[in-house]
Image (cartoon, rainbow, N blue to C red; front, side, top):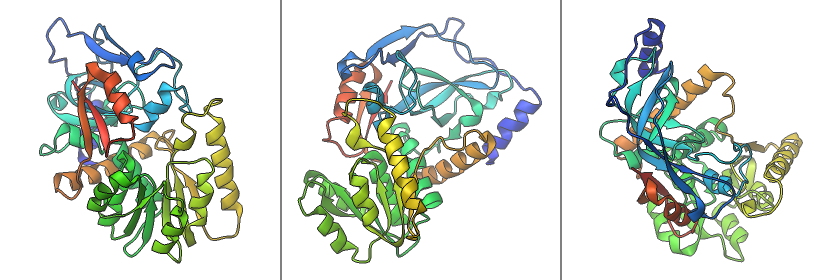
Amino acid sequence: MDDFQRRISADSTIGITSTSTSPSTPTPVTEAVLPGIVEPDGIQVRTRPARPAGPGQVVLAMEAAGISFAEQQMRRGKYYDQPPFPFVPGYDLVGRAVEAGEGVHGGLLGRRFAVLTKTGAWASHVTVDAGDLTEVPDAVDSADAETFVVNGITAWQMLHRLAKVRPGHTVLVHGANGGVGSTLVQLARIAGAQVVGTASAKHHDAVRALGAVPVDYRAPDMDAQLRAHAPQGYDAVFDHVGGEGIVASYRLLAAKGTLVSYGSASTRDVEGSSKAPVLKLLARLALWNALPSGKGAHFYNIWAGRRRLATFRAKLHSDLAQVLALLADGRLIPQVAARIPLTEVGKAVRLAESGTVVGKVVLVP
């Protein structure tokens, strides 16, 4: 538990309370609502009355919220455990605390925090549990920080907690121009690994600038090129594509290499059950792990372990704090593809899904 979390816990124990810094008539909340399976332009921008923070809660005025692949799946009704329509999407955000509920120290007010929400972040004001907050360094821009919340936690945990990448390793990152992919490339290079990254040819300069060797995923001889860069196999392969391509990723591993799967982008537009592709993927990984090959195969779920909430939060805060510290030190380069107002959410989602950008599209107030 970091110092910030200790302060929250201690203050909650002695019952220190605070009230909102908002005026007596709260500003209405603006939010983007997914009414059902719709095109990006069908996402609705609505306003509603503000709700007060409950015990142990904080209201954040959103300064930046991201558009991740998860929301792209939710729009299609394809995310594994999304809530029923209608709902407000938004996997993560950076915001400034403007109201604190009973049991939360008033010293949090006015400070900036990052938080994972899974849903609900596409709004001008978002109510969250104080225990889920991680403070953002003063020197870091909110949109820059936002690109490393879900992406940074995901990349850090896959790299260090699952694959345990070390100096001298060679790793393969599929989708190296994307939000998670570009973060993986940078963190792997900081860890001392050599990185090969797949991306379309138009993004090769950007991937190269991050420190990876680019390979065109559309090339008919892609597998041969990938093998040429790691003749003994890769120590780790990070795959967000899923589908049948996961077999090729597994075969590219070194004798004791680790495959980390964290999505099924190839099945995003496939009709049918949202759960079937994930269940098939999990079954395949389990089968590989049962083989006496020495290779490891994992499916990464950022919410795994939340039932043990204190441990889950401690790992999340520790990992995100390290990522944000690297950003503040200038060792991580944020990949902000665009900053688009929340009221233009349809335009922002369409751009994020276009395949034309490097990094992450960020919603701003």
